[in-house]
Amino acid sequence: MDSFQPTERTQVKRLPKRGVYDRAAIHKILDEGFLCHVGFVVDGQPYVIPTGYARAGDTLYIHGSAASRMLRTLSQGVAVAVTVTLVDGLVLARSAFHHSMNYRSVVVLGTATAVEDSAAKTEALRAFTEQVAPGRWAEIRWPTEQELKATTVLALALTEASAKVRTGPPIDDEEDYALPVWAGVLPLDLTPRAPIADPRLPAGISVPGYVTNYSRR
Ligand SMILES: Cc1cc2nc3c(=O)[nH]c(=O)nc-3n(C[C@H](O)[C@H](O)[C@H](O)COP(=O)(O)OP(=O)(O)OC[C@H]3O[C@@H](n4cnc5c(N)ncnc54)[C@H](O)[C@@H]3O)c2cc1C
Image 1 (cartoon, helix red, strand yellow):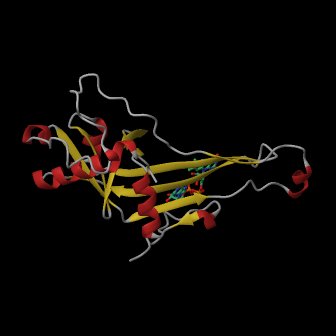
Image 2 (cartoon, protein in one colour):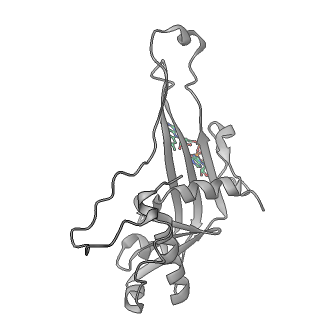
Image 3 (cartoon, helix red, strand yellow):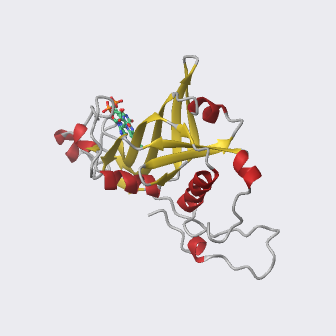
């Protein structure tokens, strides 16, 4: 299937024309990002926790210490919502009311399951490393059995997912277009700065190309 089927829960209600369910478009947003917010409820209290993620196929992985409350809770099959947000620009309108942001965001709903198998866990950790720095897994030391044991990896199937996308200039009230106020979009991008070598890096190790040419796009 090329699109996610909108459900009662993933139907974008406000400005529904901004809703996107195309699978490739959702994958593209998830691949550009690496930071998500994970929402779940414990004893009636909602928590929204920022953390890293990786996408492989139609699965999102989150991982962390086996002692993490988030991971312990979610591995019990508690309902979860994961959001990923890319901010593309500030939309500066002529009125306060019509200020906005250009963005691409994804919401995924479901329940996560623990990845127990060592090989599958290692594969998920490879996906994590490649999500933040494609090309790095081939160079680094891979996790030991002990490190795998200390790490909880959860998989969340991409079955109930939506994206929402805003692009373009401000949409002002017709009578406001004559106001002598600058209006437009201030594009924002996540761009890397010069890499800083670890002070303990032995001499002679050059910065890899995937670092010097780093781009999230
Ligand atoms: C950077 C950024 C800034 C925003 N600023 C504002 C703001 O100031 N005020 C405001 O009201 N809204 C803002 N939004 C939009 C906001 O995320 C919601 O879409 C909106 O508030 C509610 O839409 P709804 O009633 O359709 O969603 P709901 O009824 O709350 O959601 C229904 C379903 O629609 C889908 N959905 C809703 N929103 C999104 C989304 N953003 N991405 C992917 N799927 C979604 C989900 O599957 C959700 O379960 C912003 C979004 C982003 C990414």
